[in-house]
Image (cartoon, rainbow, N blue to C red; front, side, top):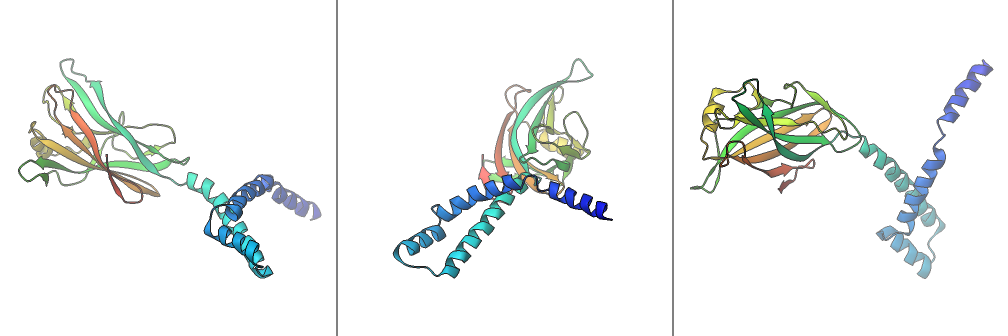
Length: 250
């Protein structure tokens, strides 16, 4: 009985092997809070210089400093382990086909984990496509107005796990040398989408969302227009909604 209790206690004590590192981190953070340029530290400093704060005030202040320092010491590594998505860019990638007379290029985006945690069950959706109206000076909806499952590069539309520092591309659409128009790389590909995107003179906006398990969705849009050469489309990332919900133009 004594041996079991001793073994249990020894294992618990071993879990405190990083306690020294914790106290050092709390000390550094607490020093910045207690004597930094924060309002409470300035008030306490002036009070101590020009007055005589009660002992209970001093004890309460340093107790608060220890509490806040412990919180921020815990918060930093915790935030690094929260699943979080960010978009690092897009690319236009040439790709051969099994038909030697037909070539393709893909418009792809590159999401990645912005923390040290992987993001599971990631899926990409084409939420809709708009076209630019010069007459009305605004975007107009098209009949591509239902979400479509997008395919991952080299894979299908099956949800994937994104890992830190591993760039997995998501296909948005493709152009081939035969049809020479945008074609969503989705499942399914509605015929009305092919018909709408066949208007090569139009400027389109592809609205995309990427989701993952226990992770805020990533919403953004691509502005795309056929170029003078079929395999050189003009593409810009025009809008991105960050994880706090605010919108920024890119």
